[in-house]
Length: 353
Image (cartoon, rainbow, N blue to C red; front, side):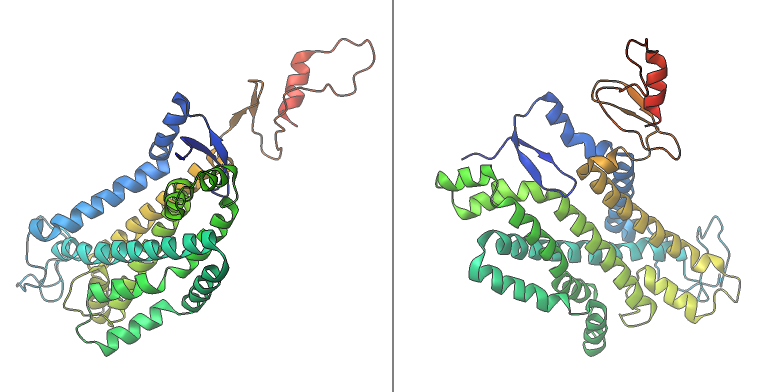
């Protein structure tokens, strides 16, 4: 059986059932991109990805090359200034973007793939398979990722970005799997899933065509959360000197700035650009996450608006201290039998209900 052409989303990320797709329903697909928060986050993230790809090629200097310009403030030659060895900080930031984005995106992809595979399979199959996969998720749920990464990086001297990404991805999927399992349990008995099962559709086709499209928002949110955690872990490891300091990333820049007392020397340009890059990337990922939440939840989608429309087309103004009640019929207050009622007054009272 073919999957429903469109579904209505609830605040929990599940569906109420199949509905007929209309022109308005097709436009709903672009609502996420039209969201200002999501659009801003996606644009900023795309810029960082482009910098990660072309950064080493457009860097004006070798990030490790020394020069006679020691601890120079930002200038036309060195846009972000120089270090105590005369190294160009702008080039370090550009080159270091690749390692941060590589670890974040790779770890996010690995963790998301595992959470989808294990979580959805566990919730849909049930029985012994559910028990076994749930036990596996519980085991990985209590494994601390960051201490494990520190142990691996300390034990394996050659551990680089790939090793860090693999460890983060292989230890960060359990929470997302638990959430997807819970949502799959609520979807497996829906009418359209039962209809597909009754017509002889294979299990994996039901999962991929009927179940997974309704979990897209949760999967995307889990991916963004894992990317944020992976980026912060990579930067933290470099900042405390656990990972290789010969490979440039934003954490490595902060490590050298801290070890050489950049703040005490007044060399603010040594750590501010890397710190701003971390803050901007984290903000972009958070905006994408907020956009996903608003796309899924109609309540969040209308938050912050000063006016909302009732089902009968009237506009109710949001006022501080009052919660508007969206009703189709405005009931007059204290109306006496035979009394003529001023509809304008009723509408004003309706704004305050």
